[in-house]
Image (tube, one colour):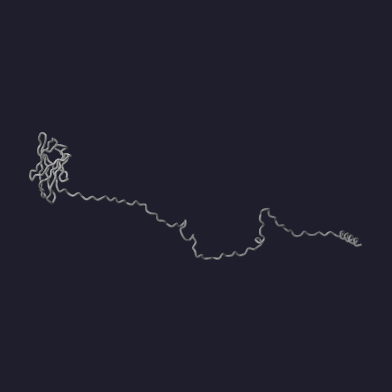
Length: 205
């Protein structure tokens, strides 16, 4: 009985007028991101932008390196050592001037003859004190036959192994005085190889 009532009711409703249902509002479906792409955070996109927090200003007790010390735009000048040439001072060894001679000798030829000549050395005392004197003569191996002093006392003549003759005075000369030593040389050459008075060379050669 109950089944018949349900069928009859369904038949009655099926014969009624057709009612059109208006379309509902359009709902957009969310897009699914491709594989491998992170989904946006809903909290980040939905959150309303708020005021930006101001950073607190802090004072550092230690200065930063950018404010202290040299920088590329403001380099610290450096002082390089000067390369100017330093003058070199050369000190020469000072030599004391030679003392003036106490005796001088002047050579001269008094007489010439065949096979020999008579020569002379004038010895002068140019010092301020009385002094003896010595004359050295060398005529390249030639022989001095005799030697004498014309105006004062005589001395001695000796011949060395090297052929040099040495005449030593017998009387000292006073300051400013002179003696004339003459000698006979067995040689035609009148220029001696050596003529020295108290270590000083003779003049007049």
